[in-house]
Image (cartoon, rainbow, N blue to C red; front, side):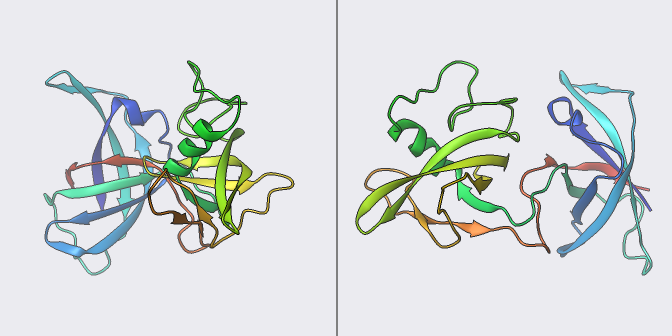
Length: 201
């Protein structure tokens, strides 16, 4: 079957044929369906000054579960990071304010020095997280691989001992957070999200 997704102008630049799409439909809220982007149509639609583009997704429907006209909630995965460490963005923000000489200058990423593009925690963005060890804070330097609105996938820089299970500091007088890791089964962090599709055909 074909699913047509209305994707907003800010997100369309990162979407390409072949991207994996997951979505749910109102009729089966507990089920998740998977498809792939086959086409990004270049004819924009404008409604209430909001510009969207039609993204076409092919989905297998062997049991006939999906019916024409259903409305879907979809997420398009645009990037992934296998075996990366996952830290809260708050830990990187705390590291930025805590690090001596660091400042969030105009054009820099909110978690530290930017070596490449500053958009959405792109590859080659560096940062610092603080880990509590033996009652003391220890700075751990990391490279930010991917980021979404709440978490970042990072790799430990040379000399860093950051590992799964470490308690990273996310703020003063607040509970810490534990480092986790992406899995091969679910490697994706981030991606473009569309709140609704125009329909299934």
